[in-house]
Image (cartoon, rainbow, N blue to C red; front, side):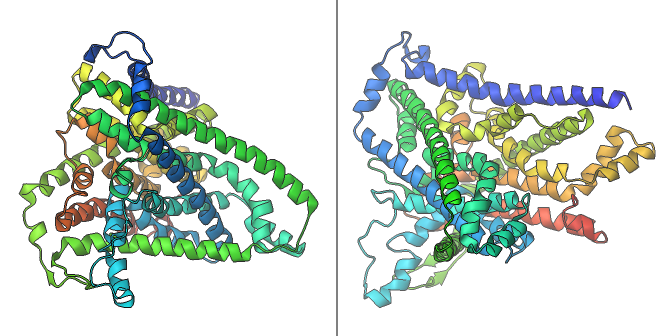
Length: 571
């Protein structure tokens, strides 16, 4: 028994070292390389002296100011609205739906990759989309209306698309946080004092929930401010958001534009840091105002109308997202669809009949990358958690920051610099580089998904196995992993979904040689053949759905005679 903690500390140290070298070091090296290029030092293009010229070039690019404004408006607006709607829904619906039912309802929206959802929304919201076709008889339209409902200059379609993906994510995050709090007791106490349900939520429950969801909200904020794939499909194009503008500069044949592009990547990182500072400031101000409001009392106000409005708007978002996913499948099976019919005039499998001409290779690359990246991430996560158990030590704050780091740093801020380093190492353009880059983002999500179920495992099971003479490795493989099969497969499904959705890491590190469903779907999104786009979007969305279905079905089959294990195994 005395060797177990020592062995655990060794395992824990080995995993932390692997994660630090494989995750933190590449991000730091990428940021350093990008920062050097941003101030004029990039020997590969003949720039060897520090200069402010890249920053001046960036500022002089037509539309740079508008790109900054669009980034801030869409990023901050989508995040603020998503948080407000998610909180409102939880306040109105908490206790009226079981966590299991909520998870099943929201899982499809979490599984759908951002690019696939954006393409479906473009099909739905465009002037010739389903919504316009449904309104055509009422409005008397004999042709699609000339209204910019997608790629609009204000970025409203992009904000809407971000909210469709972010509200379900934040709902699950808040529901998970609520499971750690005595919400019913707080509601009962508040109601007994004469406060309405909404005010109890605002004054009592949310101040306790916020510290538990702060980091996920920061992840949403960082993503919204630096999103590329959804911005390419739904956002304005002349000028685009800052992240899309930088992607164009990085991809330009003129290699000299890499310098102002790198300077822009630094600006992107500063925008995210500024947004985090704004969030911190609003938290401090909100805390002071909240304390004053609580001390002042006041039971006459009612927040219920706002809560039900948030629930209604969220229902509209979810319904729109479901229709967007359905539109991908419909377009992939369409041959002729004339205006203003609600359904195609002629159906066909023609778009699916030639996998060798495109989508077959992309599907193969996507499967290889998703399987490899997820397997590596799951192995590292299990090793990390097992090391904590054996060392009998909890997770330090810095270790949690280590996990969240890749999700808080704008991808375009370090991927270019990392690609330059991979080029020097001879790794760029191959599977190793893409798997490594994708693992930077897959591992954190897998780790977050698996941590709580792992810690919730009944310790008596492990102690009973130990009392029967089972060593630490046998306890891991014969007790922990079988009991935690459902959470492990669910974390693997999340990893596959994240891997399939990766656009920038695949684009940069693959150097255009590894085409996946996501990179091809984004590229084809501006083409005129919606049938082909529908095929790619359907496959892109279908892989995560298949992974989630397997995560539910496999334990149900293996544990069909063990009801407790079917429910999750960690209770």
